[in-house]
Image (tube, rainbow, N blue to C red; front, side):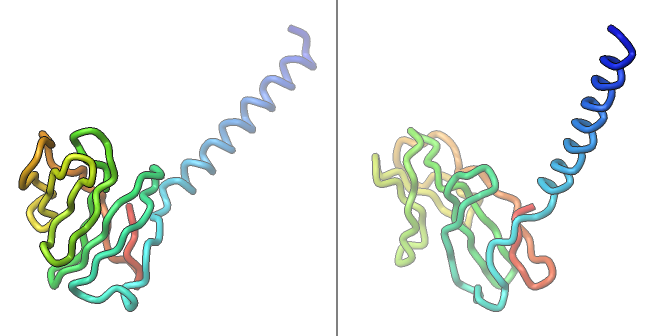
Length: 128
């Protein structure tokens, strides 16, 4: 490798390193979901998680929490039934309790829904 090639390769590597660090800093920033003032206690809302998957957000007197809306049985998208306070899969009727760790209530699902880390920061519900 000649001197010019070495300098070019070093410059490209340095640029990639700097760009990569900038991208990871952006990715580390929490995703704003909804303003707390527009999300009262007792409310629920569907949103898209940072990985692109559908999710459900809940607010209680003690805080906020969220779960993936992907059923652990065969990957269908669950729906929230407010009257029964449960998440139900339309494919095979598995149901989950969002107020008890997303645990399976009934159906063929083998495990609870995946928890999504959310919190309240600067007046927003955010995914961290």
